[in-house]
Amino acid sequence: MPLTMATEGEVTSIKRVGGKEEIRRHLENMGFVPGANVTVVSINDGNVIVNVKETRVAISKEMANKIMI
Image 1 (cartoon, rainbow, N blue to C red):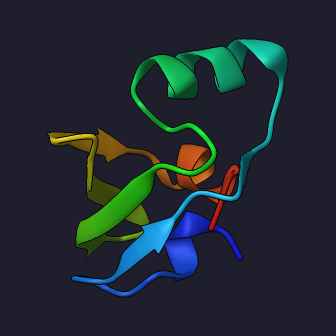
Image 2 (image 1 turned 60 degrees about the vertical axis):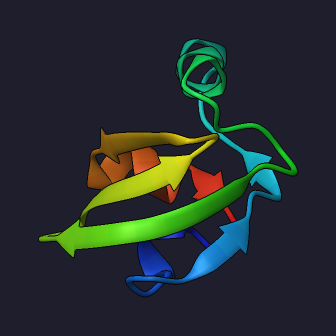
């Protein structure tokens, strides 16, 4: 399921990152790689704030839909 379906406070593991090569590379540079643990901090109107690899990152709903957990 996409990251946008996770609930606040839930810790999940990334299964795969989809999208175009450019988008996948950008997400991987921010720490969104398969096997990484992600904690959802906040969901606001579909946009997501997560903790990934000891860093808090805000991503858009479109980006979060490309991250499968």
